[in-house]
Length: 334
Image 1 (tube, helix red, strand yellow):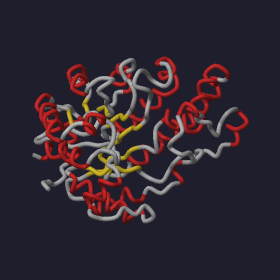
Image 2 (tube, one colour):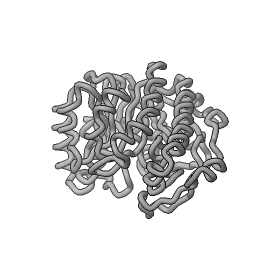
Image 3 (tube, helix red, strand yellow):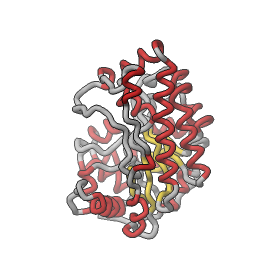
Image 4 (tube, rainbow, N blue to C red):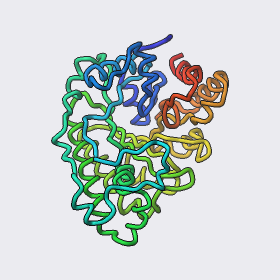
């Protein structure tokens, strides 16, 4: 299987909307199945040091110029749920001011980030870390409050909702500031699912009031440290894309579906203003043949010489046939 030495400068060129010296391969993160496939090792989460070494080995062998990690073990306390439950039906921990006062808000500074430093001992010379968040502002709102409760709180107690959001956003900002202090970290992925394939979870006006200000602060903090930021946001972004590009000012965007806007069309419209990461529609990758996948990937690489990195539109789930994933990968590697 063809591979190559990691060279993070190639992804940096993509983030600056420049032409890399060779095609760049990108995912928000790769699945445990792919980590074990590329590394040839069992991924053992109970041993964080060993797990990170395995991940670094896998990303390098897979053709990536980075390893994607959550920077530390910081996270917000939430209700454990099975993954079969609809987000819109979720109940949250905070429902009113009384439950807000009881909630145990975590302090990002009280968590362990030491593996960010130690990663430098294990990474190939050309590799850097991409630090992603323990979910984002809106995702943590949904997990802590519950989507139904958010919708009610918008009308019943908007001041309380604003307080909750500010508690979430300020802690995520501090988390990213801590990650930025490690020279092994070369980029952030600000990951925060925003909605459905037709619209955002909240109205654009409410996204601007509650959610976007904290994303803007995260980007500003990263840019002060010369760290580029990619935004991963599932859902239809078209009503708020000018906010993303012109106000929040992320360097790149990730997460695309053909039924919303094919990545080819998004590239045509916006590539001169923002870099594009991934974009090969997951449904397409699952259903089509390896040759059909190679054909579309080759065409995309030819049409997108600057500011583009090839990858899936969203993720690498276990139901994505391995031969189809490898057809996309091999097109990049060849």
